[in-house]
Length: 135
Image (cartoon, rainbow, N blue to C red):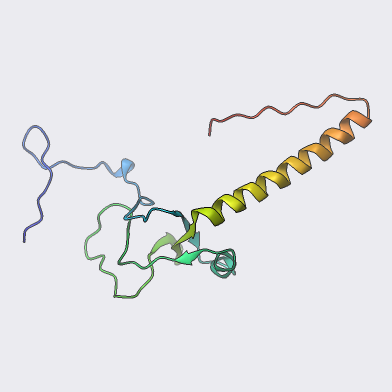
């Protein structure tokens, strides 16, 4: 079966400029999970597994733009090269675990902010925090 190639309006093959390639796009995500690409350095993979993340099989997803001869052996984990000989793996965590982790992080930040605010107020100063939703 021959793969169809998208055509641009003028009839020529549609192309993707090099500068607009997205090497971190993940296609084939399952509902109910949060996905993250984790560098395989130090003990990061193990730490993420202990936090409830799991490695994703390469057969379930595709990462980045289309690549030639990018077949993965059956049972291998989804990974990509991040340069200098290093690799990163695609990991996922159940959304309920992810939400718990985010709430714990937010509580820690709030506690730290309250401590700073109290110290400033006790010293006779004024303390305000503004949050931006822009990233």
